[in-house]
Amino acid sequence: MSVPVFGVLVKRKIGLCILVAASIASASASAAKVSMTFKNLGDKKISVSKTSLCGKLLPAPTDINPGDTSVQSSTDCGGTVSSAYVDYKNGADVCRFVISTIYTNPNSITGAAGYWTGAANATANSGSPTCKVESRDTSTTATDGDFGAVFSMK
Image (cartoon, rainbow, N blue to C red; front, side, top):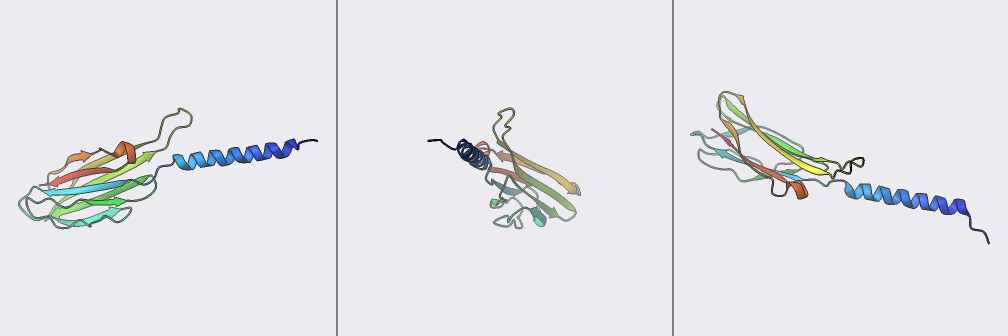
C-alpha cells in the first residue's frame, strides 16, 4: 500500500501557511485610545476653534471658563494609530494640542517585540499664549496602547 507523498506534502504546506497567517494576524495590534484633558490657566474663557481626529472625540471639547478643567475627551481610531488635535483660542491667542499613540510592529528579523509609543505636544499657533503639556498618562501605553495627556493654556 503506497501513500501519496505529494498529497501529504501539499497538506503540510497548506497547514503551515494557515498557521503562519494565523500567528501574523494574532500579532497585529488592536486599536488604542488617546485621551485629552484641558486646563484654562488664564483669566478669560477659551473656546475650541478647530479639531482634527481620526475618529470621534467624545465627549466633544467645549469652552472652558478661567480656572476650570475640561472633562476628559477620548477617541479610538482603530488599527495601529490613534491621534487628535484640538485648537483652543482666546481672541488672537491660539494653542494647538496634539496627541497620538502609534504601534510599531514586531521585527521578525531581529526578534524585537511590537510596542506602542504615545506622544503629546502643545504649541502656540498664533498670538503669544503659553501652551503646555502638564502631564502624560503612560500607565497602560506599554500594555494596550492607551495614552492620555493633560494640556493647559494661559
